[in-house]
Image 1: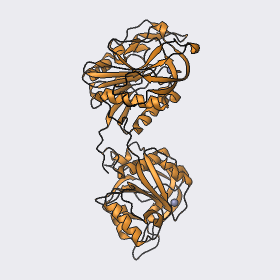
Image 2: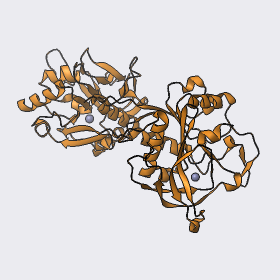
Image 3: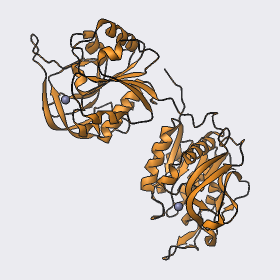
Image 4: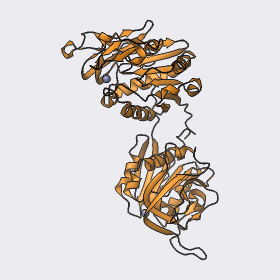
Length: 468
Ligand SMILES: [Zn+2]
Ligand SMILES: [Zn+2]
């Protein structure tokens, strides 16, 4: 199944916030992950916005502003203004309606003072500003946020209200020309204003679009589904001027069939599938896995099993799946699978672990608890399967003296003397995508974040769900 999805390219600008109130070190990765999960955005982050210039911004559709630190060099500020004014987007949230960009300085008693040069365009980029005496909010509490412009693309089709659990900012001065699309009532019993305060707004900026929500104080505020939906929609709207009907369109998860059995393994293995992008079924034997046709039911089969043999009917079903472009990911001892089915290890996997001496060939060897460093193979550094995968330093089982097809592409390798060089590779089959990942014996490996990213990437890539 091929999905032609054009991802919106988001630049998350961060690197400083007004600690201790807001900590970008926890919120930036959280937002990046959560927005990434919508399947709509390709999000990169910059943590040193002083380096922003026209070239650094080229290639993005929208800026997500999560920075509240000192003023930037004028060149950086102008690059941001030009970027937006030229027809792109600028989205910001909570905690940037005050601060140095507004010409405000924090005094030792933590109050803000209006005493410096503001970034002149910043209040238009945010759509609001605050008189220092008005900076504040009611007590943090759960409250409903109501969409008041229900035909705005960012609100269209959503339930009329959602629940926030947040600081309810008040007494903001909106810029002229701003369209408020959501409001919340500020309860005077909780130190609020007794008014409907604006909770989301949009405006144009030159040829471009800006959007802001004052929501998003901390991770618990950001984890509210209504907040994430709103932010994702504001980003999409600011980037494109519209929001696709079912936005944020969640890609249906990849359907994986996970096959185990024939060899023990730590239950930590199953944590690999703890990812909303992957929906999975489990089978404990080839008969259970491949006793009936897979077509239309799965996008990828994940092998963490070790079976010598596979029945004829099962072979036929698995072969049909592969030849129709189904994905194959196999991990660790699955390299010993189906030792008497050459098509499998020669055409699909591209490698084989020989359990016995055969003719001239000595059997393959294994060794436990080997400290290995596994890095991207030369030329494979930019392969989608390695996206976000750091060099791996692991204690795992080493394999050597295996057979490798000359037609594999090695993605990751080690130079450890107890292990063959290829550790992660793609198989030769011209129609199917197959990735073998040798690691995965130890529970520690199975929980290792770099390893988990690698396996999940392999699942998405073999299922053809990963942008190239
Ligand atoms: Zn806050
Ligand atoms: Zn093992």
